[in-house]
Amino acid sequence: MTDVNQPPPSVAPPALLQVEQLQQYFTLGGGLLKKGRTLYAVDGVSFSLAPGKTLGLVGESGCGKSTLARALLKLQEPTGGRIVFDGQDITAYSPRQMRPLRQQMQLVFQDPQESLNSRHTVETILQEPFVIHGRGTRAERKVWTTELLARVGLPASALGRYPHEFSGGQRQRIGIARAMALKPKLLVCDEAVSALDVSVQSQILNLLLSLQQEHQLALLFIAHDLSVVKHISDDIAVMYLGRIIELAPADELYHHPRHPYTQALLAAIPRPNPRQRFAPAMLIGEPPSPANPPSGCHFRTRCPYAGELCAKQPPRLNSEGLVNKEHHVACHYHQQIAEGSRLPKSAADYDNIASLSSSS
Ligand code: SF4
Image (cartoon, rainbow, N blue to C red; front, side, top):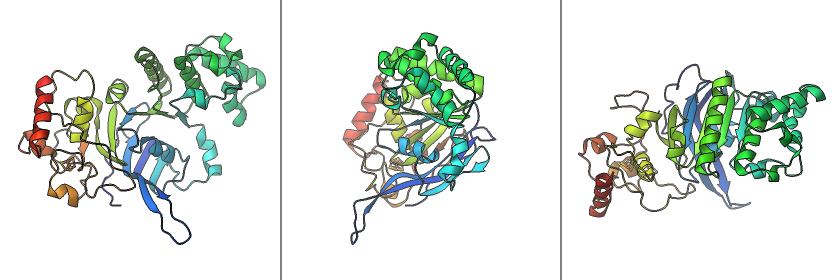
C-alpha cells in the first residue's frame, strides 16, 4: 500500500511515544499453492504523544484502532514502520527485550470481566504485577495493593472479594488499579468506558485524568464515539480503514472539522453543537473491507464530495491551507468543501447535508 501519512509534528516535544508509518498487515487464507489476500488493518499511521498528554483515537469499529494499540505495545509484531518509546527504538525488540519496558506501558481493556481472572481475589489480581516483576516483600505488596485500591476509590474490604461481586464501573476501577500498579508512563485505554453507563463513564474519565496529573501519564484513549474522547483529550486522531484521516487539537477538531468523515461522526453525536458552522456529511453505507480497500482515498465510496482525483491518488495527511498548523487532514478537497465551492455529488447527498445543517 502507498504511504500517505507524513509524520506530523510532535504533540508537545519531547515525545514519550513516537509512531512512524506503522503498518500491521495480515494474510488471509492462502495455502501451499495459493497466495492469500492481505488485510491492511493499520496502513502507515504516524503520531506522537508527550508525557502528561492524552491522544484520543476515534473511528468506527473495525477501523484498526485496537490493532494499532496492540502493534505499538508490541503485543503483536508490526509489519512495518517504527516505534520509539522513551527514547528507545523498540520496533525490532524481542519479547525478552520488551520485558523491562512492559511495566512502563500498560493496557486497560473494554471488558474488565474478561481481563480480570474470575478465580482470583482482587488482592491476588493486584499483587500479580509486583510478583511478576519481583517487586517488594509480601508485607510491602499488601500495603501497596491497599493503597492502589484506595486510590481508585475502593475500600480495603474489596481485597478479599472476587471480580464478579463488583459492578462494571468498580471492575474497571480494579482494572485501572492493576494497570497503575507499576507506575507506567503510558496507559493505553482501549474502549475502556464504552460498556459503562454515562454517569459511570464520567467517574472513570475523572479518575484517569487525576491519575494522569499525579503521574504525568501519557494516555492513548481509544473510543468509537467522539463525544467520549472530547473531555479527556488534548489531541484527537480520527481513523478510517487503517489510516489517520484527521489529527488536531481537541477544540480545533470539534469546532473546525475538515474531513467529511470527521464531520459525519460529529453530526452523529445526539446533541450537536448548535454553533457548528460546517455542513456535516452523511455517512453512506458500510465501511469497505480492509482486505479490499478502495483505491486512492479509502473514504471515497462513502464520501458525497468524492471526485476523480479521489480514486486515483491517496490524500496525504498534512496541514496545507490550514490556519492552525497543528491541524492535519487527509482530503484533496477540504479547502473547497470548507469554502462551499465544492458541492456534494448528488441531489440526495445535498438534501441530506442541507437538512443536517439547518437542524444543527
Ligand atoms: Fe472525500 Fe475525496 Fe476528500 Fe476523500 S479525498 S474525503 S473522497 S473529497
